[in-house]
Image (cartoon, helix red, strand yellow):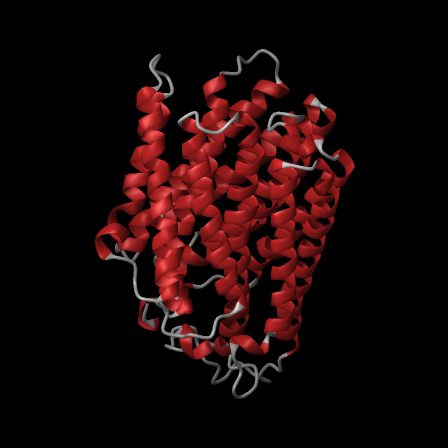
Length: 441
């Protein structure tokens, strides 16, 4: 994507997305601690208190934190849709979701209704502020192009995910509500195949060709993927209420096939990249896309009755740790150094020849990737075989989180250490076309 297509003059302050990015690895470390504390029970069934706490520490604490931070940057820069009062929206959203995730996980672990009620209020408030701000920004978007239109789908899927999740939380927190079994299935589907998958697809179509020097995604598939997946999710959700499950199974299989094709298409584009020397981000994306393809196949097998229920834990590991967390790790290693580089250039700071690689070398990224990959393999092993693998898996997951946080702090430290101009006179503005990310590399 050419640099001229980026609306960098509308970028929010660095602190707006950074608070989300730095909080995300902390929740992975908390998840690792819960995994050690609860042991094999956390992977025994997805409905145990330990499994619910672990899942939401990773999905709300890591995935949602990182993705909301990325959206606060993507909306103004890629879609020309700056959030109103970005510091206020970011501050309220960040604090509410941080505290709400802790309260929700604690409520699951200790079966404490008061914590679940507090989580309901915090998460409802935090997500309401963000969704309202994002929707308002998209309505007034200056660029009514493909990316602006496409971002409506993950934002809408986020709203559905939150409503479903709040209902499930309320059913546990206030015993008067009836817990419908179908909602239990809809919530993770909208969270992973809806909100997460649609946002990853929208971002991938921009950043994979830009940063990984690949050909563009096929135009026809690129144009209609999001609307097709969203429509499939709506139809599949409606079909859950039918007494005959065959339609729901058929729609679910088509939805799985859509993500399988997307993952394979991305891997093929990466194989055809113009820059032959790979980096750690590319490795994260490859692991993420392979995991997404395997998760799609396993989900299809479960719906078709070809795989037993005991593989649900493996499906969760593939979808959350293998696909979503790998892709987010890869994006963080591009987004955060780019933002540090861009904001320094915008004020005329830094040194001559400053590039994104100046903030973080490849070696520490490779170490964290290796630890993440080992954790993924061990978690899959624990989900499918020897439960004793839970403990080394938790240790590797925790160490991966510490390394990711350390690497992000190296970028922040490098950003803060760069010399600033004595006065603001002559400082360059973000509107200049230094926005070409390829030059930043």
